[in-house]
Image (cartoon, rainbow, N blue to C red; front, side):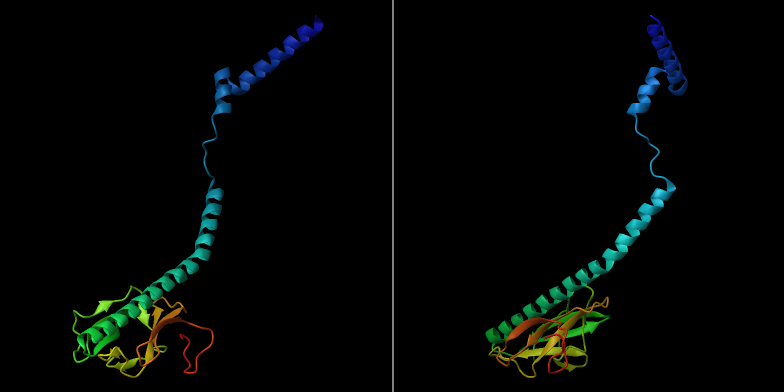
Length: 204
């Protein structure tokens, strides 16, 4: 009997303490059910921002290099395509045709035209944005700031041979080029290498 009375007294004291601390039962239940909605503290926000900044700083150079490589690779594909197009035109028309390359305001352009004609403004077409001609690595015939590849009516190359090399305007070291390798009109794509060829060029 005494134990039961002591148990009731202990239960009563616990209930009073709980009510003083939590209020009624609903408030106690609500405090357990509802999550803390205070959000991040200032220190936590600063840490999160710092981590995000570090990740961006690490990823940005890799992304820029990837983007630049994609651009010059697209320019390389386009240059080879227009060269072959001019070659086909020369053979079908039985006339000499040229592909001309130039750079205007740090932007590379191309034009297909008869060898006896000077390309007009309407002939010039742009390469992808951010692509420039690497003048140190380009060895095609050049006159008045314009590089050229000329095809005879047989589709052969009117010498000299050479290459057109592209680089990114952002300063990436990656290079892509199209090499006119034989008088018969053989053309191929190439990329930069660690060692130079016999002519001192790295794109071959």
